[in-house]
Image (cartoon, rainbow, N blue to C red; front, side, top):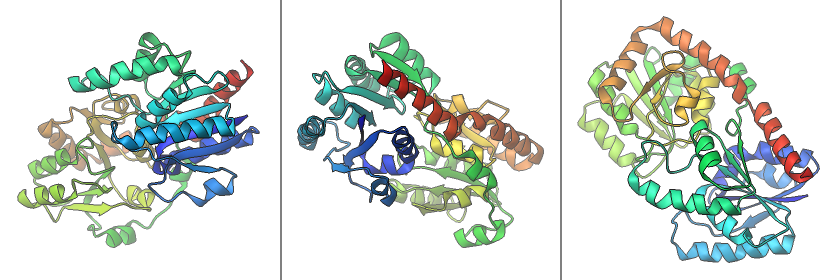
Length: 371
């Protein structure tokens, strides 16, 4: 079977879809990829035999480039005679399903990495995204969801031919648990005092990731021994730096930009913090759990699937600065609690391991191909 993986940008495949593609190739399928090459494509993608189709998707929904992308993608699918098109990310998935809607010999898989509508989402999200996803579901053979809330809604409200539930994109749990690092040397390298208490966030510097909530909470705590590291880049970098300065904690906040050593940094941190407004099923959070970190995160869909409140960490409302400060202070003072949370997370993350996810995907593909 010829299969095409489609994402809006190359970054998505680079970040977490290569193991999925390798699994399909191992099953005897030919797999190619289509996306806008924003980030340099990982060499192994071509090494395993994937043809890379460049399609000018843009994350701006109403851009003229997406009309061009629709035409190019449709031509690729017809010319190359793909039997399954598996699409990820909202823009690419909308365009892909429209392109395939009248192709009788093509089955469309869509993995939703967190719908933009969810409990507590802004009304505008429900008015725009919900009707579109509900309508496009009729052009979807297999709709794969990765958190419980999305699964229940898709199963009960959408008319996709099949709705499946997979536990995220998969985490290489053994890699994280076995990873060793010299704590003192790594902390010195990234400019954090060896004896300090380190909070860590990983993610793009944007409004959704809500890093400012942690910065404000850190100022509220008023403890100079607590430092906050953020791995990621984005348009809010200057704003976050200025916010830290205005609160007098610029020496405690470290914006490290894009990093290739996130595992190492996670291993020398004390608490993982994820105060996002929206998540599907955060890979960064799962990786932190696999590294044995206690967690403070927003009480939202996806996060609450992963973190059991008061067992693996603390769940807070995204903008509850006082609660966030309270929990930071509590974990700073309670080493026993940190260890208990860490152990709980190490046990819980096992079911989200990459092998479980790949086996689940393998069954979904096999059932659909044999159908």
